[in-house]
Amino acid sequence: MSMSNSLKKLSSCVLIDLDGTLINTDGVVGDILRKYLCKYGKQWDGRESLKIVGKTPVEAATTIVEDYELPCKVDEFNSEFYPLFSAQMDKIKSLPGANRLIRHLKCHGVPVALASNSSRANIESKISYHEGWKECFSVIVGSDEVSKGKPSPDIFLEAAKRLKKDPADCLVIEDSVPGVMADEVINSLLDIRLEKWGLPPFQDWIENTLPIDPWHIGGPVIKGFGRGSKVLGIPTANLSTKDYADELVEHPSGVYFGWAGLAKRGVFKMVMSIGWNPYFNNKEKTIEPWLLHDFTEDFYGEELRLIIVGYIRPEANFSSLESLIAKIHEDREVAEKALDLPSYAKFKGDPYLTK
Image (cartoon, rainbow, N blue to C red; front, side):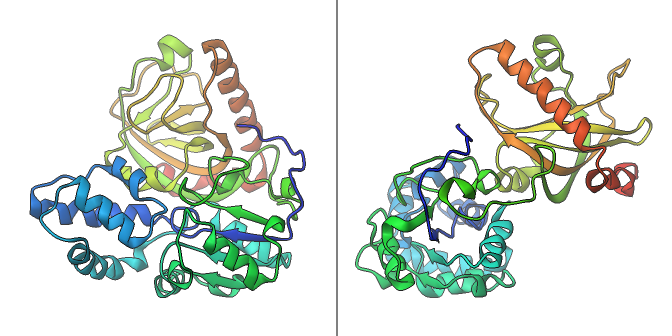
């Protein structure tokens, strides 16, 4: 992924998708389908979400009914599914970087249109649970307000029309292939560089790191893949992902940092990866913290508490083991330096780390 700051085009407004871009709809949908499919003796496969992301409600329902060979019609499925979904709307969280982006654009007077394959009423309901969001959008367009939903460009064209902007002057931010053919692919909203599109840049990066809303995870240290020390020379203290499925879905793959606490040993600086580790072709998303301290013994089974306070970069693949190792050590240097800054150092004393 190229993150160069070269100007790609001048944009005067932003058209942005909702589900999967600003809010984590997939998490709630997956929970509902997991329970719903049980009554038909079926098991929800999370990878199926890739087939329905970005589609209209009817298209998504058709995919599920056909793929799982359900003994019901699409309209019957929707009549059962959507009451369940509506009851869970208040649990749909904003994705990392969403509040930051929306409020930044609003603060700088950049017109923003919300353009989604959901119906207008559905959009209004979803954003009502996120304080201040509705006021940040100059225009809202749903799929029921145009002749064709995505991948047709009708929704975006209508949004540009209502903003009184030339479509060529609009920056479109969309998470799915059905939504738009991309000029650039980024890992998450945390990585967006607005200055590349002629828009006001964020000013919140500090020493090559981005402060994020702190989040906490913890559990006993488990044995990982056995490659940290043996292959990389970098001993990681792995945590089970069993109790953190929601966090893994919510937080984009990448390199983060913060503080790590071991009740009997103290508090240490920490850099960690969340993701699939493409160089090793992982089959599952993992959490792999590296405590930046030279320990003389293993501590498998000990309770490890983490506070993640900042973001460094998106996950990447590497052409060689040597380049991967070099990048990991570069991440360590960035994290160690950043954690001495007052805005990050203050979390070292959080009682969560040692209780």
